[in-house]
Image (cartoon, rainbow, N blue to C red):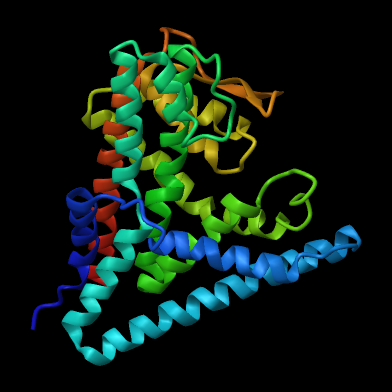
Amino acid sequence: MYDLYPLVPWLAMVLDMAIGDPRSRWHPVVLIGQVISFWEKRVYPQRNSPRQTVFDGACCVLLVLLTVAAVGGALIYLATWAGYYAYLLIATVILYITITPDSLARDSKEIAGLLMHGDIAEARHKLSWIVGRDTAGLDESEISRATIETVAENITDGILSPLFYFALFGPLGALLYRAANTMDSMLGYKNERYLYFGRVAARLDDVLNYLPARITAGLLLVSAWLLRYNVHNAWRIMRRDADKHPSPNGGYAEATVAGALDIRLGGYNYYNGVTEFRAYMGNTSQPITWLHILSTVRLMYATTWWMIGVVSLSMLIR
């Protein structure tokens, strides 16, 4: 029998392109979010010191990972027991639900289409679904910048990291990464409630994305070269500006995209009316428009296919 396992990343990507990321309360990532909320309600401290709150947050992280590992591991075990093709099927489905290229492309292209037709108000509304910043009052350039920054940063979080951990640890690795990343999205805020409680979740996400973020930058450079974007500037801006991002990982994709497209990302954002400045990445050589959103989506897809090829090759030769 031929080993078909290296085909799983390709099949998962085909599923994503054919079916997309369904918006359903039964989506596994939504269910992971419910698991996080379940454990948060039970371990969140009422009156404790910062140190105790950090410890309780760590317990929440551990309990979520153990729950997801138990459920995911049971499904994988049953599939393995059922036979080789059942295991391939469950591995494909798990990887498919942990990667998000279709949803990134769908949402960003919808915003680009609204901007193309001059519907700024609806573009602001759609943007508010995918970003945490205030979107009221943003013009086309700022809407485009916010969309590009979201797509670029999620190339790592939403695509390459799950593929990376699938290559290392199989479908359970991809699923546990998605659980950790979802915890960061839900708990990793620097506000009164989560400053200490979400600290371990945020640090875990930083650690898990450290290598994938840098792989993302490398594959974005290859993609920029193939798509005839400014690969030399992408390399220069990535080296100069990647570490300016408040996240230790987020700047690698954003700075590389900014350099490849000859635009400048970063600047002033507003969160619940509070101004926050993000260091600039790239140079101001042209206004940012909806066309740059579409270029970012092309870079995202090219980088995804490269990563799928690398993962499949690694599975073939080991």
